Length: 206
Image (tube, rainbow, N blue to C red):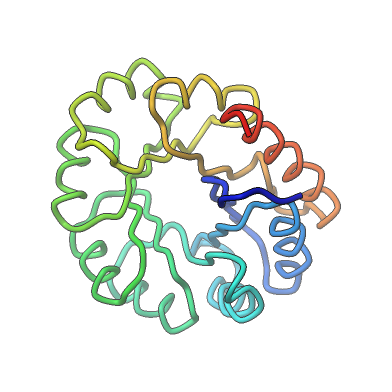
Protein backbone atom coordinates (compact mmCIF):
# COMPACT_ATOMS: atom_id res chain seq x y z
CA UNK A 1 0.00 0.00 0.00
CA UNK A 2 1.58 3.28 -0.99
CA UNK A 3 0.69 6.91 -1.55
CA UNK A 4 2.30 10.04 -2.90
CA UNK A 5 2.73 11.73 0.48
CA UNK A 6 3.05 10.48 4.06
CA UNK A 7 -0.21 9.99 5.89
CA UNK A 8 -0.70 12.36 8.79
CA UNK A 9 -1.24 9.49 11.19
CA UNK A 10 0.91 8.80 14.25
CA UNK A 11 0.85 5.24 15.57
CA UNK A 12 1.07 5.24 19.37
CA UNK A 13 2.51 1.95 20.64
CA UNK A 14 1.81 2.34 24.35
CA UNK A 15 2.94 -0.73 26.27
CA UNK A 16 4.93 -2.31 23.45
CA UNK A 17 8.11 -4.15 24.44
CA UNK A 18 11.43 -4.28 22.57
CA UNK A 19 10.97 -8.00 21.90
CA UNK A 20 7.80 -7.41 19.88
CA UNK A 21 8.20 -3.94 18.43
CA UNK A 22 10.02 -4.70 15.18
CA UNK A 23 7.43 -7.03 13.55
CA UNK A 24 4.72 -4.54 14.56
CA UNK A 25 6.67 -1.60 13.14
CA UNK A 26 7.20 -3.44 9.85
CA UNK A 27 3.44 -3.96 9.50
CA UNK A 28 2.79 -0.28 10.20
CA UNK A 29 5.32 0.89 7.63
CA UNK A 30 4.06 -1.64 5.08
CA UNK A 31 0.54 -0.25 5.58
CA UNK A 32 1.83 3.27 4.95
CA UNK A 33 1.73 4.53 8.53
CA UNK A 34 5.23 5.89 8.84
CA UNK A 35 5.22 8.00 12.00
CA UNK A 36 5.54 5.85 15.12
CA UNK A 37 5.90 6.84 18.75
CA UNK A 38 6.65 4.70 21.79
CA UNK A 39 5.33 6.32 24.98
CA UNK A 40 7.99 6.45 27.66
CA UNK A 41 5.78 4.58 30.15
CA UNK A 42 6.21 1.47 27.98
CA UNK A 43 8.69 -1.31 28.89
CA UNK A 44 12.28 -0.22 28.05
CA UNK A 45 11.07 2.36 25.53
CA UNK A 46 14.52 3.60 24.51
CA UNK A 47 15.45 0.12 23.28
CA UNK A 48 12.36 0.02 21.08
CA UNK A 49 13.01 3.52 19.74
CA UNK A 50 16.66 2.74 19.03
CA UNK A 51 15.82 -0.45 17.14
CA UNK A 52 13.15 1.22 15.00
CA UNK A 53 15.23 4.32 14.35
CA UNK A 54 18.10 2.19 13.06
CA UNK A 55 15.87 0.00 10.88
CA UNK A 56 13.64 2.68 9.39
CA UNK A 57 16.06 5.57 9.14
CA UNK A 58 14.94 6.54 5.64
CA UNK A 59 11.37 5.24 5.58
CA UNK A 60 9.73 6.32 8.83
CA UNK A 61 9.78 8.95 11.56
CA UNK A 62 10.36 7.37 14.96
CA UNK A 63 10.04 9.05 18.33
CA UNK A 64 8.63 9.05 21.82
CA UNK A 65 5.39 9.94 23.52
CA UNK A 66 4.59 10.87 27.12
CA UNK A 67 7.80 12.90 27.23
CA UNK A 68 7.72 15.07 30.35
CA UNK A 69 11.25 16.40 30.95
CA UNK A 70 14.19 17.85 29.02
CA UNK A 71 16.33 14.94 30.23
CA UNK A 72 13.97 12.51 28.54
CA UNK A 73 14.25 14.54 25.34
CA UNK A 74 18.00 13.99 25.41
CA UNK A 75 17.57 10.25 25.92
CA UNK A 76 15.23 10.01 22.94
CA UNK A 77 17.68 11.98 20.79
CA UNK A 78 20.51 9.65 21.81
CA UNK A 79 18.34 6.67 20.81
CA UNK A 80 17.87 8.13 17.34
CA UNK A 81 14.37 9.54 17.78
CA UNK A 82 13.14 12.33 15.55
CA UNK A 83 9.86 13.39 17.16
CA UNK A 84 8.79 14.25 20.70
CA UNK A 85 5.12 14.03 21.69
CA UNK A 86 3.91 15.07 25.14
CA UNK A 87 0.59 14.95 26.98
CA UNK A 88 1.15 18.51 28.23
CA UNK A 89 2.45 21.90 27.17
CA UNK A 90 5.85 22.31 28.84
CA UNK A 91 7.93 25.09 27.23
CA UNK A 92 11.19 23.64 28.60
CA UNK A 93 10.48 20.31 26.87
CA UNK A 94 9.56 22.05 23.63
CA UNK A 95 12.71 24.17 23.70
CA UNK A 96 14.91 21.17 24.51
CA UNK A 97 13.32 19.28 21.63
CA UNK A 98 14.04 22.04 19.14
CA UNK A 99 17.59 22.50 20.46
CA UNK A 100 18.11 18.76 19.88
CA UNK A 101 16.93 19.11 16.28
CA UNK A 102 13.73 17.12 16.70
CA UNK A 103 10.08 17.86 15.96
CA UNK A 104 7.89 18.91 18.90
CA UNK A 105 4.21 18.03 19.29
CA UNK A 106 3.02 18.98 22.79
CA UNK A 107 -0.40 18.17 24.16
CA UNK A 108 -2.80 21.11 24.40
CA UNK A 109 -6.46 21.74 25.09
CA UNK A 110 -7.00 25.46 25.68
CA UNK A 111 -6.17 28.56 23.61
CA UNK A 112 -3.61 29.57 26.25
CA UNK A 113 -1.78 26.25 25.91
CA UNK A 114 -1.92 26.39 22.12
CA UNK A 115 -0.31 29.81 21.89
CA UNK A 116 2.22 29.04 24.63
CA UNK A 117 3.29 25.92 22.75
CA UNK A 118 3.63 27.76 19.45
CA UNK A 119 5.56 30.60 21.11
CA UNK A 120 8.00 28.04 22.56
CA UNK A 121 8.65 26.65 19.07
CA UNK A 122 6.30 23.67 18.74
CA UNK A 123 6.04 22.23 15.24
CA UNK A 124 2.42 21.27 15.79
CA UNK A 125 -0.22 20.71 18.43
CA UNK A 126 -1.65 17.49 19.86
CA UNK A 127 -5.25 18.04 20.94
CA UNK A 128 -5.74 15.57 23.77
CA UNK A 129 -8.13 14.14 24.74
CA UNK A 130 -9.94 15.03 21.53
CA UNK A 131 -13.17 13.27 22.43
CA UNK A 132 -13.71 15.80 25.23
CA UNK A 133 -13.16 18.78 22.93
CA UNK A 134 -15.17 17.38 20.04
CA UNK A 135 -15.24 18.71 16.52
CA UNK A 136 -17.26 21.80 17.45
CA UNK A 137 -14.81 22.76 20.16
CA UNK A 138 -11.84 22.27 17.86
CA UNK A 139 -13.50 24.25 15.08
CA UNK A 140 -13.98 27.22 17.39
CA UNK A 141 -10.42 27.06 18.67
CA UNK A 142 -8.94 26.50 15.22
CA UNK A 143 -10.50 29.76 14.04
CA UNK A 144 -8.00 31.72 16.15
CA UNK A 145 -4.89 29.62 15.48
CA UNK A 146 -2.30 30.85 12.96
CA UNK A 147 -2.96 29.66 9.42
CA UNK A 148 -1.06 26.47 8.68
CA UNK A 149 -0.86 25.27 12.28
CA UNK A 150 -0.42 21.49 12.25
CA UNK A 151 -3.03 20.02 14.56
CA UNK A 152 -3.44 16.39 15.54
CA UNK A 153 -6.49 14.88 17.22
CA UNK A 154 -5.62 12.21 19.76
CA UNK A 155 -8.02 10.26 21.95
CA UNK A 156 -11.29 8.93 20.60
CA UNK A 157 -10.45 9.35 16.92
CA UNK A 158 -10.41 6.61 14.31
CA UNK A 159 -11.71 5.40 10.96
CA UNK A 160 -15.33 6.15 11.87
CA UNK A 161 -14.77 9.87 12.42
CA UNK A 162 -11.72 10.89 10.36
CA UNK A 163 -13.95 12.78 7.93
CA UNK A 164 -15.73 14.69 10.70
CA UNK A 165 -12.42 15.97 12.06
CA UNK A 166 -10.90 16.74 8.68
CA UNK A 167 -14.01 18.75 7.80
CA UNK A 168 -13.31 21.13 10.69
CA UNK A 169 -9.64 21.59 9.79
CA UNK A 170 -7.67 18.98 11.71
CA UNK A 171 -4.33 18.16 10.10
CA UNK A 172 -3.86 14.59 11.29
CA UNK A 173 -4.46 11.95 13.94
CA UNK A 174 -2.70 10.06 16.70
CA UNK A 175 -4.05 6.52 17.11
CA UNK A 176 -3.33 4.54 20.27
CA UNK A 177 -5.52 1.61 21.28
CA UNK A 178 -7.18 1.70 17.87
CA UNK A 179 -3.93 0.49 16.33
CA UNK A 180 -2.16 -1.35 19.15
CA UNK A 181 -3.07 -2.74 22.55
CA UNK A 182 -0.59 -4.64 24.73
CA UNK A 183 -0.83 -8.26 23.71
CA UNK A 184 -1.67 -7.54 20.08
CA UNK A 185 0.36 -9.52 17.56
CA UNK A 186 1.92 -8.10 14.41
CA UNK A 187 -0.93 -9.76 12.49
CA UNK A 188 -3.47 -7.92 14.65
CA UNK A 189 -1.73 -4.62 13.99
CA UNK A 190 -1.57 -5.32 10.26
CA UNK A 191 -5.37 -5.58 10.04
CA UNK A 192 -5.94 -2.44 12.09
CA UNK A 193 -3.26 -0.42 10.29
CA UNK A 194 -4.64 -1.27 6.86
CA UNK A 195 -8.17 -0.35 7.96
CA UNK A 196 -6.92 2.98 9.32
CA UNK A 197 -4.83 3.75 6.24
CA UNK A 198 -7.72 2.98 3.90
CA UNK A 199 -10.15 5.08 5.94
CA UNK A 200 -7.70 7.97 6.04
CA UNK A 201 -7.17 7.82 2.29
CA UNK A 202 -10.92 7.77 1.68
CA UNK A 203 -11.46 10.70 4.05
CA UNK A 204 -8.93 12.93 2.29
CA UNK A 205 -9.96 11.79 -1.17
CA UNK A 206 -6.82 9.94 -2.27
